[in-house]
Amino acid sequence: GFSRNRPMLVFSEAGAVAEARPLPQVFSGLACVSGNIFRDEVTATTIVEQVTKLTGHANGKTGTGSKVSQTSNGVLIHELGHIFGMLHDTRDPRNVMMRGYDGLGKIFDPKTAKDRPVRFSLAHARMAAATRFFSEFFDEKDTKPPSIHRFKLTSPAKAGQRTVEFSLQMTDDGGLGPMVALQRGGGQIDALVGEADFGGSKKVFKTMRFTCPRPLVAGQPLVYVMNLIDLNGNLAQAVTNSKVLP
Image (cartoon, rainbow, N blue to C red):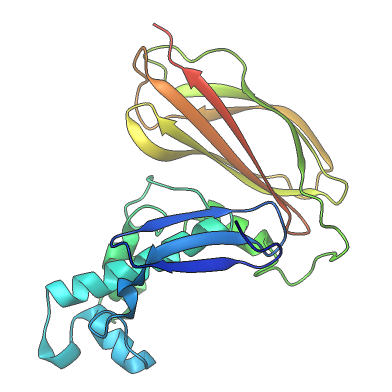
């Protein structure tokens, strides 16, 4: 279960655990990560000590300890990203919503920080900014998520295609905000294939073309997931399944 209108972060003793999801209530979401993050060699009690662990300079040591600290703390940031409406994004290996968090220490190293070695994509920054966790202006009385009336392929995907076309029908009385769409399957796990910012439109009936990371292969099962946020920070999610035709 979950607590309505309260994000929940769970630390598990079951080893390497990482799972999360947003929930359609405002200020809600669930994330679960390994309790190993509380080990002294992974997480410190002061900012200065934590930075030294992430950059590999703790006690003059580098290597495995730093990698564990970066990944363990990075996974926590990644899972919190899901609460903020983000999906996996494999378009850039530096993305936190891929596995860019493995290099978390680089953002604290003056030699590498200027190149933004770990980042959220613009699409996901828009999603987080629209949530009530980060938005400065929203109508608290609006607690109704956007209505997604249609999120379907206009026709079944065929082998060899690199793009798929979706029919979208969405409404919201307070105005629609950003969206992201993910493709699971199709030769790559969880690829972000679509993004948009509807800029406060109360009704969106349109066709969108999503770009697949690689050509589709006949018989592959596909799952498409869309997260949509309105201007008042309410989130809705839609899922559709398909299979690639010859």
